[in-house]
Image (cartoon, rainbow over all chains, first blue to last red; front, side):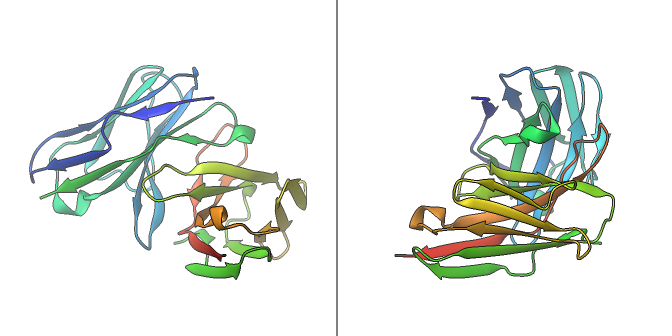
Length: 112
Length: 113
C-alpha cells in the first residue's frame, strides 16, 4: 500500500512565524497535492506538483508556497503564518487518475 | 463559484438500510468522479470512482450512479453499517493530464445501530 506521511499531526505556531509542513510518499508517485480542510468549506486545493521542481497554484495559494526538490517529498510553506491559516492540512499523492489520491493523516495547524 | 455541490450536510440512516449520498456539479468539462470517506483525525480514503463514459460502477456494498444530463451523481451504500459513519466527499476532475480534483463540502453520514 502507498503510504503518505505527514511529519506532524498537531502544530501550534505564532502569528508571523515561517511554518514548514512536510509530506513524504513512498511509492514513486509523480503527482502530489496540498489541501486544507475547514468546516463547511470541504477540501480546497492550495498547490500541486506533477513532477520534481514543478508546481502549480491551486484555488487558494495566497500566503503559501511549496517546494518539491525530490520526487517523494512535497513541502508546504507558510511564509508568515496568520490566524486564518489555522486549519487541517492534507497532503496527497497519485499515480494515475483511476487510482484516486492517497492522503496522509493530516496536520492540524493552530496559529495563535 | 462552487463547481461540486453536496447540498446535504448530514444524513442519518438505520443499520441495514440504504444510504444515498448526492452530489451535483456545474462544470460540464468534468469527466471523472470519485467518492472519498473520511473519519475524524484521519486523511480521506478513496472509495469508488466512475468515468463519464459509464453511468454505474459497483464495488461490493458501494454503487455510484452518474446522470450526465442532470450533472448529478449519487453514492448508494447497501446495507449500511455503523462503521460507514463518516464524512463522504464527492470529487471531480477534468480530462487530460490534469489530475487536479475539485471536492464538494462533504456529507456527514451517521448509521444508527
